[in-house]
Length: 315
Image (cartoon, rainbow, N blue to C red):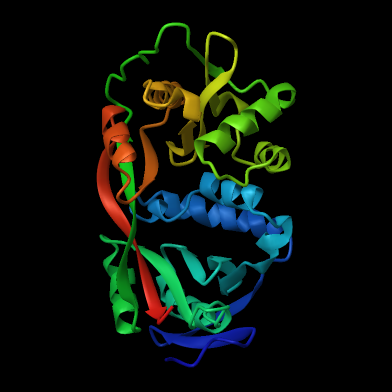
């Protein structure tokens, strides 16, 4: 294994000039704004945006069990500008990199192997990360550094918003609307908890979601039953700079599954994005999920790549 990048700074030779790379943990909201800025730049690349978007980052931060977890995110800077960061979790490192500074990914892997791979309980030391199959740069780096691809994967979908998007076809008695806000937040959380049972979603977490920079209440969408109960939902996150939207999460209450509500919400959300000037929409599905494999194509999405988990170690 390469010598880990443990110091606060390191000089690398590149094109016969020295580039100063520094690394530290997130310090404040200015750093968070820089992380979002990096994702907007990366989001201009339809491949790199599959790793994380500004909406994904806001969602990860807002729904984490520990509100201070964001402070554990390590950042890498090239000549003082943010070049990459890791969202760390249990043995896993999500690598988010500026497209002009992919050379820092090797140092990021070093950091992950030192800080995230320690033995934990019955688990042997190991670390995981993710790569799109079409990302030849990252695949080559992972293979060269002893990682192997696992069977765990996500499917990255795209929907072209220049097409004519059909109107939602709702069952009798159901309507679609935006989330009304604080007055129905408990019901909003309950439908999420039912959809993803067992779920750790809480009212406080959804309040944090609502306070995040990318969140738009008008894109927090609900399907409502005739009796006024909330039956299904989705959040659409809009990257205005790159004119794309991401659906995350999408779910239906257990009492209202297989009614076409999720498809209706996806179509409604795409029409709203289209009206905002978006050109494309995305959604991610867990690999091997038969329900998602049927749902997203029915709502106009095409599976365009797989994001595989890669592992180093014996865990």
